[in-house]
Image 1: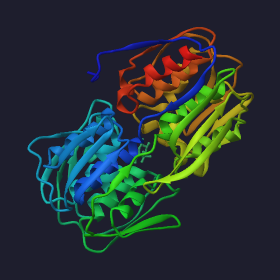
Image 2 (image 1 turned 180 degrees about the vertical axis):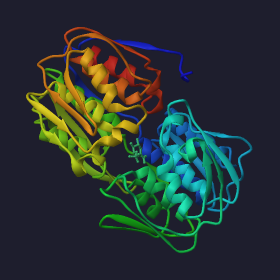
Image 3 (image 1 turned 90 degrees about the horizontal axis):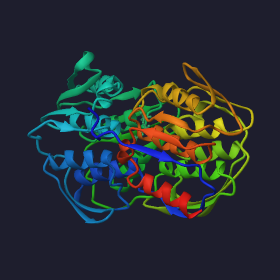
Image 4 (image 1 turned 135 degrees about the vertical axis):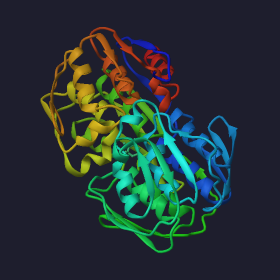
Length: 436
Ligand code: S3P
C-alpha cells in the first residue's frame, strides 16, 4: 500500500503566471546536513532544511541511533553531534520510506559502524537496485545481505572492519560516490572513487566544510579516513530540482514572468538551466552569491518559444532529476528533442522514461521511448485529460506543469507523493495560477 491514501488533483490551464516564489530547501543537502551533523562533534544548526518525507526518514533514522535532533523553527534544526564513533545500534529496522538517498548513503555509513542494522523502505524503494552500493562496500569488507542476492531491500548490515578502496564506479551516481565516501570515514587511510561523469558534489563540499580531508580531482575524489568532524551552521539553498517545475511552467505559459528566489545553482546540478536556455528559454540568473559553500542565485523566467535539442553525455547527470519536467518542455517545443545516455531514469522512484511516455501520450504529446531515453516531437498545445503519477513525486509535479498550458483541465491521480520532496507544491501552483 502506498503511504498516502490516494489523492487526486485537478489542474486548470493558467491564464498567466506572474510574481515571486521561494521553493523549499534542497533535498540532497538536507539529507547530508543530518548525516554529517550527527557524525560531527558539537552542535550543528541547519536553516532552510527541507521538511519533506524523504528527509524526515533520514532524521528518524539518526534519532533511532541516539542522536538528538530538535526542530527550532519551521525549517530549522539543531543537531547534537555524537562523533564518528558515537552512533548506537538501532533497536529496530530503519525505515527509509521512499528515499533512495537515505538508503544508499546510510548503507555506506552503517557499513563502517560496529553494529548491526537493517534498512527497509516503501514498495517503490524495495524494488530499486542496491547492488551498486553493496558491491563496492562488500569489496571494502562490509557484510551486507538483502533480497535478490543482496540487490534489494530490506538490507541487513553487520558493520565494521572495513579497509579503504580505490573504486571505479560504472555509473555517475552521487549516491554511490557518497556511500563509499561515508564508509571511507570509518577507516584509516585513503578511499578513492572515480566516476564516468561528475555527479552532484554536495557530499564533498559539506564533508570539507565539516573538516574532513576530501580531495576532488578530474574524474574522482579521495577522502582520508578517521577525521574529526566539527559541527557547523548550514544554510540550505532552495532546491533547483523543485525550482525546475516553475522554470518550465514560466517558459511554457503565455505571458508568464516569474522570479524564483534563492535557488542552489551548483554546477553539478544546474544542467536544467543550460538545457532550457539551449532550447531558447529566457532564464536569467540574478544576484549570484555563495551560501554554506554552495552557489545560489535568483532566477528570472519569462515565457519563451522553445525549440527541440539533443541532450546527452555529461549533461545527463547534471540534470538527472529534471528529465520528467524537461520532457514536458520538449513536448511543447518546436521540432524534435532527443534525450540519450539517460538509462538511469529507468531506476528512479519509477521508470521515468516509461512513465512520462505513457502520461504525456494521454495528453496528446508525440513521444517515443529508447532504451536510454526518448524522442519527443513538439506539439503546439497539449490536451486535457486523466493521468497518473505512478507514485512518483516528480512525475506528479511535471504533469501539473503540463496542465498549466494545456487546452483543458488535467486530472492527476495519486498526488500525495509530492510530500516526499515538495510540501506545499499544490498550494503554490494553485496560488500562482490564481493570482495571475
Ligand atoms: C541524489 C543523487 C541522485 C538523484 C537523487 C538524489 C543524492 O541519484 O537522482 O534524487 O542526493 O545523492 P543517483 O546518485 O542515483 O544518480
